[in-house]
Length: 144
Image (cartoon, rainbow, N blue to C red; front, side, top):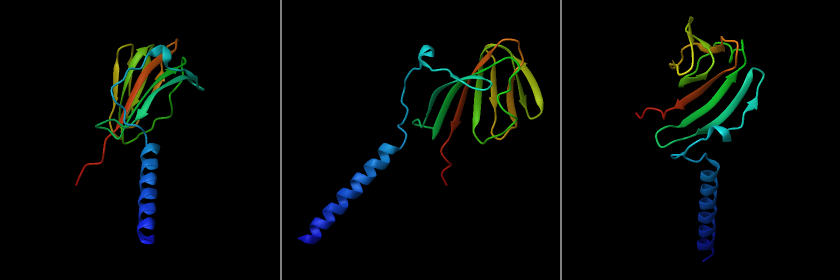
């Protein structure tokens, strides 16, 4: 009888531990909306940033969306690269993106695609603030 009690206690402890692990993981992002007015603008050294979301979705390990505002003449960061691909959608202002050494100047409504591991950055090439939406995703590893 003692062995049964010990086994039951061990099973309950394992279940509670598993539930705690699941609760600690990020929640799967389902369909939703994000209202511009509700997104808090946090001041940065180069302008401002609005964090929209960073979570797994039904098909992605992670979907990260934020909105950056660069003050006139400011650069987002030094040219860098990463495995994740990303889209930038220019909302307002004039930006210049550098992709693998080639510069392109773009205005509102323009879309920038940074491919995996391409060297890139973006700067405000205008005289007013430039705002752009950044959408980056991480896919699950390929199954073998």
